[in-house]
Amino acid sequence: MRFLNQSPDFDLTYSDVFMVPSLSAVTSRLKVDLTTPDKIGTKIPLVVSNMTAIAGRRMAETVARRGGIVVLPQDIPLDIVENVVKFVKSRHSVIDTPITMHQDGTVGEALSLIYKRSHGAVIVVDEDDRPYGIFTEHDAVGFDRFAQIRNVMSREIFTLDESLTPQQMFERLTEARLSVAPVIGKSGKLLGVITRNGALRSTIYDPAVDKDGCLMIAAAVGVNADPATRAKNLAAMGVDVIVVDTAHGHQVRMLNVIEEVRQVVGKIPLVAGNVVTAAGTRDTINAGADIVKVGVGPGRCAPLE
Image (cartoon, rainbow, N blue to C red; front, top):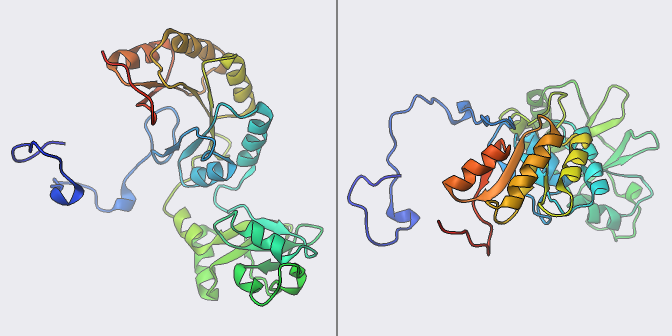
């Protein structure tokens, strides 16, 4: 960024400046191609960092549906990582994962689950996983938490077929004046749920998927213990991107780990960092990283050169 006038010698806030636009050939914000040019190939440049409190399976599937990618933390046991990867890879690229219960469950149980997903609905299914009823928070009004959900749920279920396009689903929901509906497969079993907002977003965003059409996910390794073996296991699980992460990445140990990981993960894109200098970036790339993670985390200091 540059100032059109003389650069001030005092701090500025958002309200103090005006961004001057230049000539553009973009006709609509919806026609801007945000596909990342790197080897990851996500549809939007949005990466959720490998922080335990943030990067989980629900975040991973949601972000991937919108075109980004989540990096699972390096301190999660491999068996749990494998379960998360399998779960995310099994999710539909458009239709949201449902919250399901059987009819002998209670209102209290339903209310404890309903906030786990943004669609705000619990689908009551029979023994064959076919939709039997639908419960929303509004249905709980006037009932205690020990009431069985069969006595509270709505039995008038409006379902949508998986063969419909997101636009058609949006139109059907709008015509029915509903915000959410179950989606069923060819066998009549519950496949997921779709909301009007979700259907609309699906016409704007393309999901980030691998060569098999499954949602993409990344995972991190540290520089201690045996990162190469962990990376090899992650690659075998189907992780799409490997991230070698440490606070200060411009160190001999980090460069050695990058070389070791590069040898065992094949052509899987390899991200490494953090670095903050040109020399650190150059050495990280020469060691085998495809993408360099630049910057420092909170409370960390970058070395000066």
